[in-house]
Amino acid sequence: MLNLLTRYRRLLKGVDTWFGECCSRYGEQITCHQGCSACCRGLFEISLLDARLLQEGFNLLPAGIRNTCLRKATSRRDELTDLWPGFVHPYILNRLPHADWQEMPEDDQTPCPLLGPDGSCLVYAYRPMTCRLHGLPHVDDSGEVFADDWCTLNFKETDPLSLSEIRHPFRQLFTEEFDLLGQFATDLFGHPLLELDTFIPTALLIDFDRL
Image 1: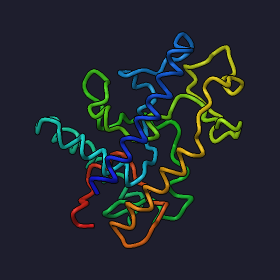
Image 2: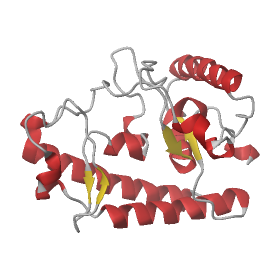
Image 3: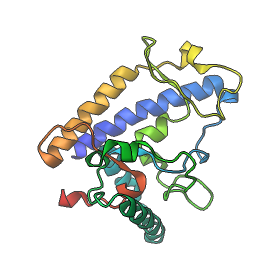
Image 4: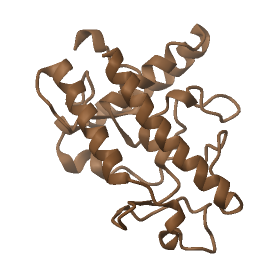
């Protein structure tokens, strides 16, 4: 397990390097930076591997801060279990009907429970893959587009899809991510499952020792 997390953190570091290079080249057109929490609202899915890494960073926080975050996460979890009675520990979204969790309300402005009073991420170094990728389109070096949207605060006068400088070997990145997720799932459940998603609030409540 420790080896898997180490390898995953290495993969995430590569994403951070790519994002940092994009900001260095187009900094005046990119609003995303550490401390910005404009998009840290509502619910979005993360992998169970992200959830495990997130807990590593969460467990390093002072007890008082952890308790505050857990109260927010528990309240959010209770809202979801009222909506989806089958959403029980270990809070895997893929066990629910697909239409239920794929249509999350876009106007949900509930802050992430891991935001500090100043709006900064309390576990920034341990944040999930999607948090690191968010804000820019994902165009592979080959030109294949994996995600064609970007934060509306970025590139207000330029179409970033046309910028070859922000391309990245995304196919390789996602292939490696799925390989690690498959190994992680095999360690937990005995099967190389690739669709194991949860939300950040429920990620804090998963008891991995029980799995």
